[in-house]
Image 1 (cartoon, rainbow, N blue to C red):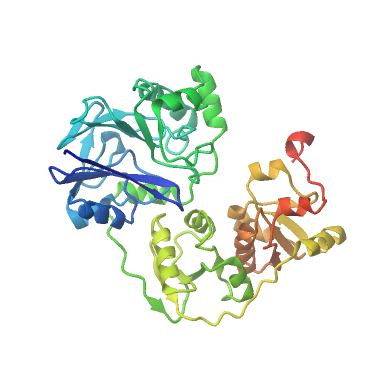
Image 2 (image 1 turned 135 degrees about the vertical axis):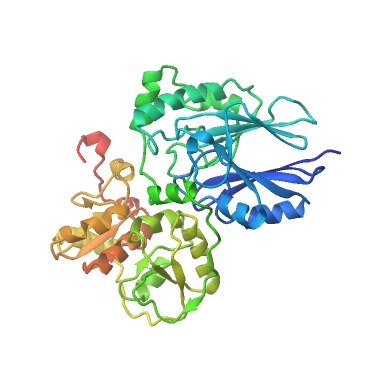
Length: 449
């Protein structure tokens, strides 16, 4: 029996999706939108007796480093990307309507500009079943429950206009075609996307709010008005992905001293508070969005040394940092003398500090979270902008708070490294404070932030 291999790989930290498609009869395969950590694709291909021959990129990614360079250098793969990408690496340029066949697998290129000018979707047919598409890989054009951002590569209105017309092309596919996106919830490339990893054209036609907008001008207004935070390191990541092939970094090694490197402490927030190196920044690797948060708080072009609880924890952290272009990770500290502390603030103590005015309380959540409800009298500085605000604090002790404690600890570590007297709320957040019987200010109700 003829077997077509299809596997989806989702990076839970970044929300990125990659795909391995192959023909087990011919022993050939290709990868779409590979992550920098290519080992899962290689292992899966070996398990099924196929060889990865090509890499297909839907576009030049802005939120994570592609593994196409490693696949080309280590496995001799041909990299394919649309000619509008103007890629500097050796590649096969793709054009709209082009067909690529790999055994009984046929891939049709659908040029879908909008998210980026070179963006393409790939309609995949299993010729043993039908010449009609079986599934479509939609990259960053169409997600489950949302559409891609138009503001990361071109002027937002121009990008949104192109994206509107591109989505109409995808809606020309039959309802039964399965849809596999380039991102799931957790990515910065779409605010309303679902946690579901796949859908169908028919389901999205009926229920995706962006596909339900019929007038171009309404789509442009909604698309440009709902764009969220731009991915950190965007320009650097785009340059890495468009430039010369990037090889795998050297293996991570233990070091005895950080020297002049930035120390990134990837242990849980409570362990960091109990004892850490002076000047260290804390982003727990076991939490969500580790790589994105690290990129927001690390100094640009920083040389990084990790403080981890184990070699395995350090390895995972380094791999996730490499994925977003933080490549200068020089090692991990083996049992450092961590003697600086952060004293957490309990919610009971926060009540007293707010009443007495003894501390300035800073809400480090994002604006959309704060608008739902915030503590009266608190200042708003998202954790990712806290370093730039450090000089504005006047010497009054600072307390950071978020939704659960993790971002409060991240922000507190940044402020402490800048010399600010700061304490985080680690056990709970704004909603937990309200559950104690306190009232929140609701932006949408009162009309004032």
